[in-house]
Structures are given as structure tokens and as C-alpha cells.
Amino acid sequence: MKNTSLNSKNYTLTKTKITSGLQCHKKLWFDFHKPIKKDNFVFHLGNRFGEVVRRNYGEGLDLSDNFDIRDAVNQTKKAINRKTIVFRQC
View: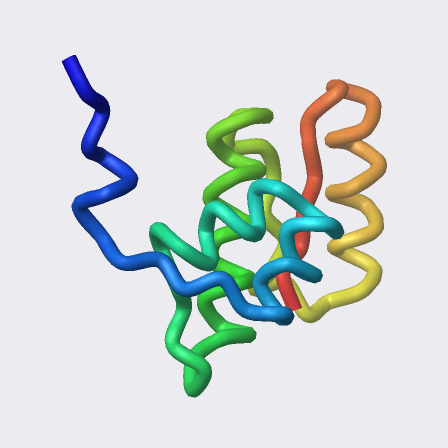
């Protein structure tokens, strides 16, 4: 049986995508299969990062909305002692 999954879409390989693939194979895959619109690129990149972190390391402690530095430092110290993943998206 012939595999036609690659033949069902027209893929255009550009210099940018070749460079992207040389830097990171996963980024190249996302560029083809789940491209991000340029106007929301930074926003979606942050969301995608957060999704990958949660999927691979669990929910952890998200300090993205905590703007009280002292509180964030204290929560981070406690989380480190509990061996909990801490992340903050800016």
C-alpha cells in the first residue's frame, strides 16, 4: 500500500524553512503542520511553550500573573523545596 500522506498536500520548501529545520526539527514540523499567523506570533509562541511545559512536566506553579516580587520569590523557594516545576510567561 502506497503512503500518500505527504502527497495529499503541497509543501513548499523555502530557504527560511530549510534554515528552521536545520536549527530545530520540531519547529520545522510546526511550520508545516500548525503554522502560526504572523500577527499573533509572540502570543501563540508563549502559549505553545506553556502547553508543552505542562504536558511534559505537569501543571507546576505558574507565576505568570504574580507581580509581587517578594511573594513570587517566596513561592518559588517553597516550590523548589517541594521539587515542583515553576514557570513564568512574560
